[in-house]
Image 1: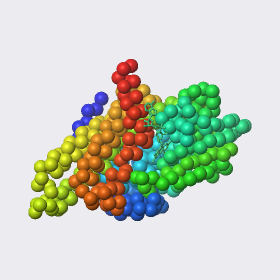
Image 2: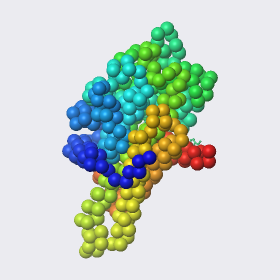
Image 3: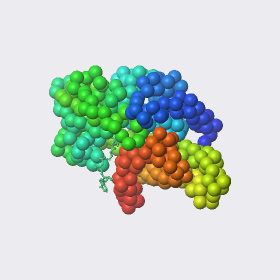
Image 4: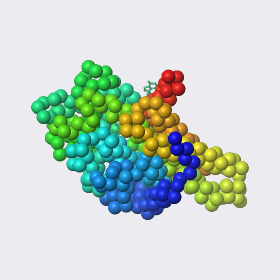
Length: 389
Ligand SMILES: Cc1cc2nc3c(=O)[nH]c(=O)nc-3n(C[C@H](O)[C@H](O)[C@H](O)COP(=O)(O)OP(=O)(O)OC[C@H]3O[C@@H](n4cnc5c(N)ncnc54)[C@H](O)[C@@H]3O)c2cc1C
């Protein structure tokens, strides 16, 4: 096992390049995205130009061929400068594209990956339903019924990141409604297939501008070639994917924590009260020291788990060590980020409570990272079940 405590030259160069891209291209978009739930159409194409789409996909399909750690460093850098875009990027690049790359047939990979890697198409992942959140598999009601060479999908998927702007969706549906957690099949559904609909765009308290919707499938005809993995074995695709998804979402919290610390340091040095900068007060210094330690510990843990995910064998996700570690990393990074963001607003005083301040935008964001990709409670269930096994 690789115990990696610092980035090598190549990884540092990837982080620096993504940081520069985040600062120059994504940061200027963040305020308008937050104010208006606005989606900047060109952003994904610009990411593709800089080699930041399809990051984990083999270059023969148009990807960058990076491992999870290098890909996670991009999520961390994007999280610093525009966390809403970082979320949309992860939903596309990992939840949809990486999953398709790992589990799809040669036909699907050749047909769909090039456009998903060059920014022409945007991808999303549909697991959650109105009645199926934490119990996503057991309570799933979206059905897929075989009809000759097609499957007919019916059902809806709620809170889907990129839903309003997506061209393709990796959708899980039950091909056997009586098989409990099993009997699930993964399909790659493309917007041109009749029966794909966007029910509503959802307005959020944070991560605004990252587009979220309820997707509805009404007698949606999906060719049998668009099954991802094997029929009835979608639970394996979901469970293995969720570990990499959690490992890849965690660095967004790290990036947000880093930015929160940075702006808190800047603000505390220039804001004066009682004739001195507030950074001279020991109670403010104590907060800054705590924020630093919380950020550094979560960064170290998240990088370690990303390095382990990078070395995981195909099909290894969804069980054992990586299952516990990915849940632990995303839980810890999100919990620590919430603590960092709370102290950040306290340091900013009234300024941190005003909607358009950057500190407020960050503060409204992090709660999602304790909910999406499995809640803190679900993460604890996974960790404790693994420890007690
Ligand atoms: C902005 C946003 C983007 C999202 N993006 C996507 C996406 O792209 N694709 C997708 O498929 N889904 C997405 N989700 C859905 C997300 O994964 C779910 O919201 C999450 O899994 C929780 O499900 P739920 O909201 O139905 O909560 P519920 O499952 O109803 O949970 C409510 C509360 O009960 C607790 N709880 C539930 N079961 C237990 C238990 N056994 N023990 C203890 N406590 C429990 C939960 O922890 C939580 O506190 C997104 C959600 C949001 C808000």
